[in-house]
Image 1: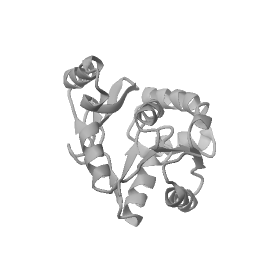
Image 2: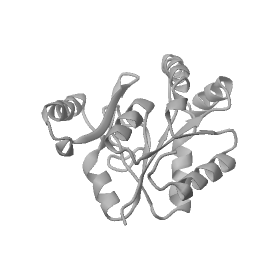
Image 3: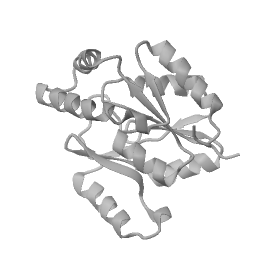
Image 4: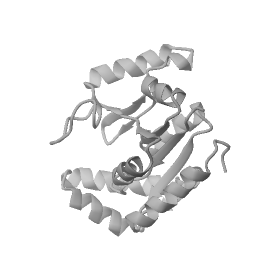
Length: 197
């Protein structure tokens, strides 16, 4: 039995990472897809654990390879996007290996990337995580204390656009309280059979 892809997407600061970590703890069938990025390493992050950290040049080379490869199964990346001035993407090979071994693959990615994966894997389940409101989202972003004011404002501007796209996804879960959001996602996973909704 092959696994399914579950995509957790939504604005920066909405709690995607926390929800993914909890899902991995409660459901042993899940494995987390590690994204590649061109951004610099933050304190405490480890290459190959948090992200595959690539130089901008190396990332651009992967994108160019995929543009020229006519067969999508030869692509290095399932999806990629430029977000807030940095590249992010999902390496194809580890995802396909996990699916073939019967594992569910959890992708925590930006909304543009989520749409690309859905095109290549129509049976993937897209779950959009939304904040209760923009004020709460801003408070969460500031509480992380990882961004300067300019980056916070950029992320809030991007979030406003992303929220207008939420109806394009299979499910929308409002992360008002972590435990109720987790319960709702768990129910979606249990009922998903790759047929869409």
